[in-house]
Length: 217
Image (cartoon, rainbow, N blue to C red; front, side, top):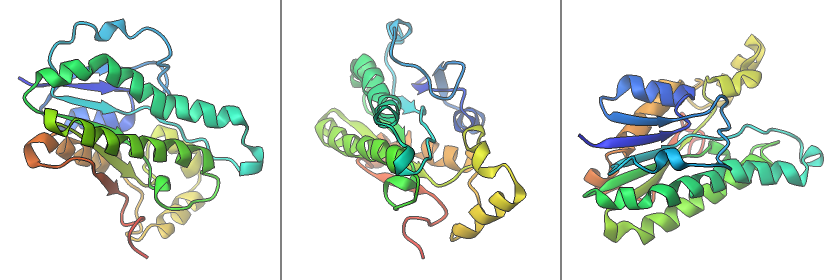
């Protein structure tokens, strides 16, 4: 049976993915959502062939630009981009062993829509999306597909400060064309679909699981 590696598997969306999917998952997580990947990844040494990889770690570092420090940008880039690079370098040969594989990164609607206070995270996630498209081109002949799921605001523990009052919840719903806040299960279904991208001729795509935030007015 094919195996899918989940990095940051304790996140709400990762938990939902494991609940809705019948795939075999290999899970790697840490105590918090950021997942420190600066150290040893030796636990990935013996995972063998894998047909899927999902990289969940991310940040919600929302501040006015005047309050952002250079370290904020560096930290967001470290978690969102370099963390993905470190994992991918560790397992790219495991993906090559499979006769077709899919990699899914998690971005944000803020990489494609200008939102206030998102300068640091949108810079990092935009970099992740650009890297994904380049990797999709580079590894197309190896039948490894690279895609991105870019959610809008989703009801997860990471977003709890943005949804801490009923007034904030209603205001967030009102900004969405479908008047909804996303659920972890909705985002997980998009990820699950893209884990079969190598079977469906889909690569280099950014799938907006956002209730229309990017394309609708």
